[in-house]
Structure formats: C-alpha cells, structure tokens
Image 1 (cartoon, rainbow, N blue to C red):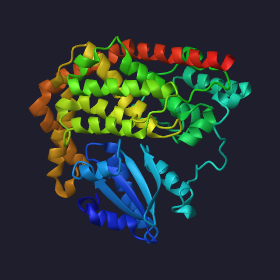
Image 2: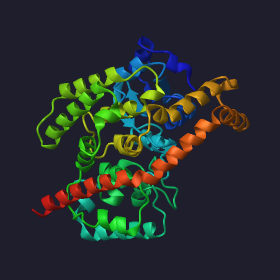
Image 3: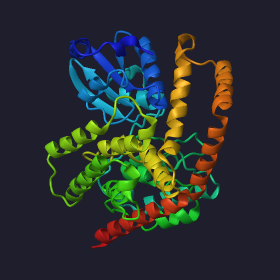
Length: 422
C-alpha cells in the first residue's frame, strides 16, 4: 500500500493544490476489505496513467484527522482533484471497474473507456418506471423470470456475475446509480432499500413489492423514510441495544431532523453539522470490537446527515452494508447477544490483522494464511464454534426482523401509490 498515507497536513494540501495536476485521493482502512482493494487498484492506475493521474491513499486509522477534514462519512471514499479544486466525489465504489468508469466520466483516462460504459442513459425525472406501464411490465417480467429460477439472492454487497446475484444486479446488470435508474426505472436509493430486505427473491415477493408501484410514482424519499421507520420503531428498545445514552440522544436528534426533512421543512446545514459533530465525539480512535454496534449506528447516521440524493451511491453503504448489519444487530439483540458476542467478529479481524502485519511485505500468502487459520482454531476454537452457532441462529431468525422491514416498505409504497393516484 502507498506510503503516501503517512504524509499529512501541509504536504497533502500542497499535492492537491498543485496546478496542472489531477489527483485521486482514496480513503481506506486495513479492516475494510473493499476500500483496501480499491486503494491497491488506485496505485496501479497511477502507474498505468503516469503523467495524467497522481494517486494518494489515506489510511483512516493512521490519519483520522485528515479523513475528518475531508468530510469522510463512510468507506471507501474517492475524491478527484484537478488544478487544486475538488471536481468529483464517489463513495462506496463497489469494485475496480466502477472506479474506472467514474474516472472516465470525470475526464481521466478517456482513451480507455470502459467497455460496459453506457453511452445513452435516460434521465430519472418522470417517476417510477419512467411513467411507462409497458416498461414496468418488461422490468417485472424479467425480474420474475430470474426469481423463479432462484437467481436473485441476498448479499452483503450488491453484485451480479452475469448470471445470478443480488436484486440490484438482477434489475440492472450493473451497480452504477445512473445505470440502475435507467434500466430499472426505479431510484437507486429505492433499489438499495430492496437490498435492505436481506432476502432471496421469489415471484411472490416481486409481485408484493413491485406490482403495487404505479408508473410515475415518486419513490425518491422511500429509502430515507424506511431507515427512519427502522430507527423509530417502537418494537426495538434502542436505548438498551445501543447501551450508550449519549448515542441514543443523537439517534433521537437525528429522527427529529429527518421528520422535518421529510415534511419539507428545511433543515439548515449547521444542524446536520452539529449532528455529525455529536456522532464524531462518540467515535473512538481505532475500532474497539466491543463498540461494533455503536460504531455501525454512528457510521450509518453520519451517512444520512443529511440524507444523500436518490442517485448517490452512498446508499450502498447506508442500506446494503451498514443497513444489513443493522438487521443482524436487531435480531441478535432480540436473541440476547452480549457485548462480547457482538465483538467476536471484530476481535477475530484484529487478531488476523496483527498476525498479517508480521508477515514479509505485510500480507499473507495463501499457504501462510492456511497455517494461521489453524493457529486461530487451536487458540480460539471453542469460542469460534460458539459464535458460529450464534450466527446460524441469527440467520435462521433474521426473517423476524426482515418481515418488519418489509411491512414498513410496503406501507411506504402504498402511500406513494395513493399520492400518485390522487
């Protein structure tokens, strides 16, 4: 990984403000697999496009102040600077291909246009399914055919391998917001809300979710309304789950701001900034596994302060990553998980990262990884087996939570349909 991340403050500012220079700034962390991979890919881009692009990778654990100064709300985050000015910002790029396409759209490496880059995209300005009943029939029929064959599966990250994958890929065959909106006729944020249902899709689910949506319905705020309902749901004892009175205060503060936002009452940027500062003060340096639940909620509320536009790829982080983890948090809390149970996955990750740091070059070879995994099982085998049993129980009971999420979503769709017909 780039050693540039060790250079902060003035030297970074000097790099970004240099004239006649295009700089790609990537925020990453060792514990965040996708950001780690994107940072490595960014370094390779700098070599391929030497003279055209300079890359700079910031390890957020080593340089948290730099990440805060640049307004990082979630990993991964990519910023593009040209002649000293920020010209583009991308959060939650899912893969190297998406990073390539984003750079191409912003005038970098235009001679290497991605093969799958859409040349013609329809603007999302006429409501669901572009207000076209025939288009809705086409989308729903294609999705039901895939669902009937068992090809639409739940996933922690939206994906599609050309044959099967999650709901986003099944609807659009790609993960970029503009492609999803053009191909599905649905707001990208709404499609991420479909990922948040955490379920495999069958024909009945397609009929129950998509069939009630009238062409032309405004679904652009449904994702925000859905996550609001989850955090306001009286079925969850949020105060006990968070086990942090100040964080629960921030949750309630965020709910009040979102209520006004959804009612069309302006919420000034200063109020959002105060929420972000309040959340930031609760975030501890580094990642304490015992704070995994709190960190997830802090990150998620931070992403949604203020809620992104419907076509912003921050919704991947909000609903497909943090959101799905929130669903697991809810069911695990109902199954009486302890703080130590929630912490186990983070403890394991830290254990492996510490061992990997001792390896030549700071990375495991496949052979060494297999040996270290055996060491882990020898040291923590009983705890690992117990955690696996807890996780399997949570997976079996997850529908108890996802049914509540689905009922919220269906109610919001019904409201959108009523407004459309009014």
